[in-house]
Length: 609
Image (cartoon, rainbow, N blue to C red):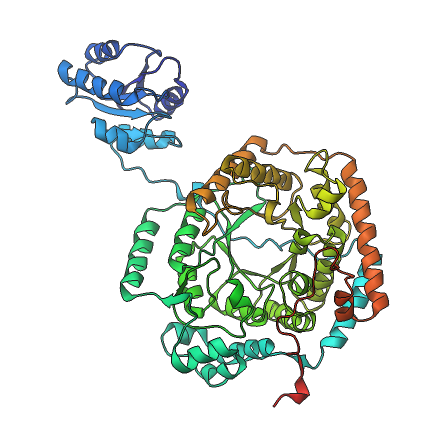
């Protein structure tokens, strides 16, 4: 048992010391707690009075003049001849371990310090954080959902549309589907990890690619904005990972709830920086991270190979890049590789599945209307992407980002549900991803003239009135409510996160505070901004909730009516591709234009050479 003197060297703040005093008492130590606002000389006199005091714990919350004040205190203990006899620790909001060490204290305890850490200091024990306190496990957000339809009328309509698509897509293929097929059949990821090559993949793969990858496989020439990592850079990455992992722990954001899981995206262009961003996200509480590729990559038939860095946003998808990132992930982190657009969609799903991703992202309608891929090509590629997602046991979310172009929510939702129904019929596990956004539809029609709560809540209500499926608002939440002011951006993200939490959704995607206005790669401090803000928001509400008004139910009914109307028109058209071109799922007037990338590349399987 030790005798410990505790003294707030501060006018009023002593809450932390009281908590520590209680902890020390509980651990069997004798505690003397002094009142606040005592002069430093009087605290030293108390040490002299209690000759058997072994440890002095000071606290200081106010920051002004803290350096000078504490340095003088150490000088006083030296002058009084007690410094050698008494171990002195200092803690409080104004304290950092580095400052305490510089001033001559034996330990410094900053914000977030636990009582157990201080007890260890008193008892001369090494503090070892309880692994169970911060231990996180990877979670399947689709668990517990049976994909049972609540609205039989909508279910019947979706089923008719799925049959139209199944009938159209049969016997069709594309270069993207064929690359996915040979990647699936010929590429053994474990042999490749053992540096035993790509087997027969290289024999067939280049001929299915466009000019850029073909040139790479023939001559080694890379995309002009990419380069290979040097040997020294690779050694530096491995050293950085080893050092960082050895002292890293992860945080939990949800306070007393289990959900929503929180995702953010990286995509700096550089896998080394991506790994650093992921580690920072994990340390500050993110449950999952999202990989996205550069826009030119989505318009290129085929992938490059090698450990490559890229000069702009979006990290190039290559097996080596994905593998390096996979090696850096915490075991608890959910990893999504997006495959919802572009000419490599099916192969992205195969690569993601073989490398070890947990989730992917597929949406035929958004890919054809908002991401620039020809509707025929996107439908064929999307169909096979879903089949591969099912094969590799990867749930996928169906994003509705076409809302950001101006497509009304009910049309975007109709497209999302069409893809979801296809997935369910193919045995896959879709996740619905409505936007929590101040979208053009909302602005034009004053749907959020009073608050941002009701229309976002209505989207969740509408989907739950259709199907029992997981919901993951994104992407990111609060889209178009953020400004370049980082405080404002963190706050709006947090408010949307707390609304999502109140509605009981399964996951959310959050932006970094500089995501809309960074003018370049997202910065780590901006990631931490929103993660910390969201954590405090969840802490603020606990199990309390934000309650939408009755207007949310009226909006939900309008969305449901709109979805049924769109599905009726698609059925009447009788041709899914024609329905996209005619704007039934988003028109040119609404800002949705059928894509042209990959046009005329869909082939009949029986006509393949």
